[in-house]
Length: 440
Image (tube, rainbow, N blue to C red):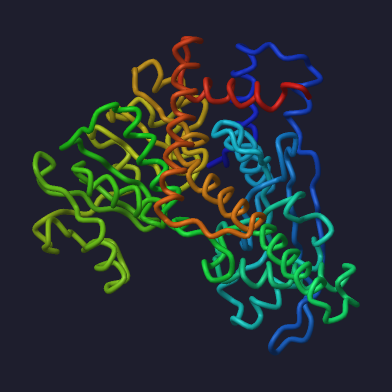
């Protein structure tokens, strides 16, 4: 089967939005290409094999609205088209939610599961040394992504601060109180070079749940009034899928199907049953698989459900479908069989342009990824602000500010869709591109 070119899909979304905007060819050409691609090769001392050379990279797509922003992934099969697409979508996403940051993405060609923890730390620090001149709190602000974590961000920011303080005017500073104060202020500012850090290392409260919580707030705004008993199928049971399922379940929605990379589960009685995401997660951790974790109410019982494939889950007759796993899940081949009334995209790029057209004709509302999963980057922005201003917000404040941001973004997108008579994705792109190109 031919692999779908994710970056080309992103450019098709861009071209569709430009049929509304009618930008000059120069402005469109600027949006079609990343501003910079950093490629580095660097040595790492291995536990038993001596030194080994690794390849790292960073795609910096747009910084017209602020520093580049986006994750770092560790993966043995790097797909540069996918990485460019994710950097592009991040630039769009930041503009949609109206935060002063741009789009970036990067990582290292490595299978982290084959490394010891010591090797992983040396790899993380060596990568930072290799790209140190290309990142910074006002240049490029990386975050966790595939196979990276708050612990890895802590190693990276620690290495970055060591590099910058060593080469700064503070390196030869005396023990003078004023110099000590300046050094502390500079260290706090440099913490803002990475987000997704542990809270005790300058991270933000509420960051772990932020993407799922933001998607929940957007869905609430779409439905206008609190709905209960609506059925939901969630494809993907990682951090994002778990939290969106948890928040929806707590609000009275019924979670009738869940899946991970190995397959899914569906309740036996879709008319009344609902999985308990918290119990399902506990069961999965205990058993190592989702396949037998049919947890309904307060009971996990094999009679409560059955297994289902990821493909079948997408086509269930539910009110809300939440693709929260991989890109290119809803395509021209299966879109006609989608029965949900609302598709809430929590993954990046789960719906292809061909599928978008089919879903729009079927009057299925698609809440696009650049809006619905923007909660993560929004709270990353809050973390960055807290570091720069030497603050620590309460979790309540983080969640309040998150809700303000994403609901405001939803209102802007919804109004644009009504005004242009188009789908919400095109409206989001129109809004974002207008913000990216005005005064530039």
